[in-house]
Length: 316
Ligand SMILES: Nc1nc2c(ncn2[C@@H]2O[C@H](COP(=O)(O)OP(=O)(O)O)[C@@H](O)[C@H]2O)c(=O)[nH]1
Ligand SMILES: [Mg+2]
Ligand SMILES: [Zn+2]
View 1 (tube, rainbow, N blue to C red):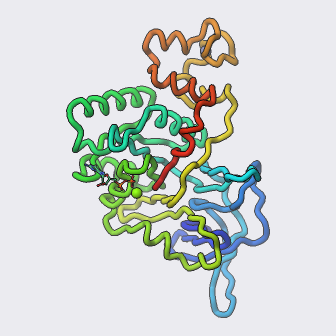
View 2 (cartoon, rainbow, N blue to C red):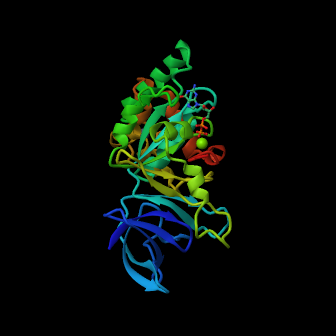
View 3 (cartoon, helix red, strand yellow):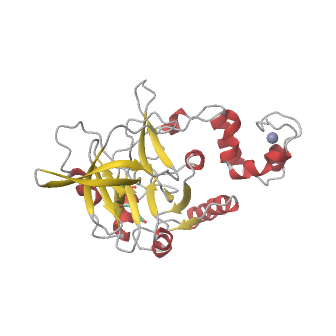
């Protein structure tokens, strides 16, 4: 049988098959995944093959194969083991929720987030929330930022989780897809999810798991089916989702507007800092590239990013 992992609590996996039947599964043997030194071999979102076995009249599943992943997102472990914890696999999109104030979301945070998502090959949609309370100046700021990010290919939607403004557009994007909501604490993630699916009480469900006894208090991601044919992945308690290890030369590839220009730079290993005949610097002078984006790029390649790290993928 083939199914998708909805929840993992360490040694048990909740797997749903194509008919919507749910099975508690364990892993048979050891899985070694190419190139990943991970504390968990299987994550929420994984497609797995499993067979059923009966033990003391209890039916459960045994997973014997994982399908190739389209993408996966990881959190680095805080200790020195250099192991990673795979949070979720096969994500279709992340909605990055942004507020201009209460709390402010800085462009440096947005750009760092987008670089990480590009590196993970996860599509990001920007949601500018709380537009119901913004004055005209603040709305202009939303319009300006939406213009900046649309120009480089990101879909941007101004929404209000409270009044429901443009929530239909978000739902349309979510249909038949697996989504995750991210952004600083207080931007309105819980409010938005509640307005999209009023009956869904994510936090309660995440705690009442039957296999948690005797385990330490690590929280695990969980996937939920919504009534209109969408899936969301909730990652309770996950903060400080580390950055991917990137070479300096690679970082520009995750800024779409820089990536597009790099072939026109004189040097093929151009970092777009001080090199002569640099197409990126030229575009910056011509105001074709946004200064805040370039500044974020410099901050990342110079490694001035430590204080952004703790907030990336803050999903509280
Ligand atoms: N005015 C307004 N307030 C909002 C909106 N969305 C969320 N809030 C408020 O912002 C606060 C934080 O929202 P919450 O959903 O808990 O944010 P989370 O930390 O991202 O989950 C709450 O007081 C919400 O009522 C919105 O669209 N408009
Ligand atoms: Mg919340
Ligand atoms: Zn260059």
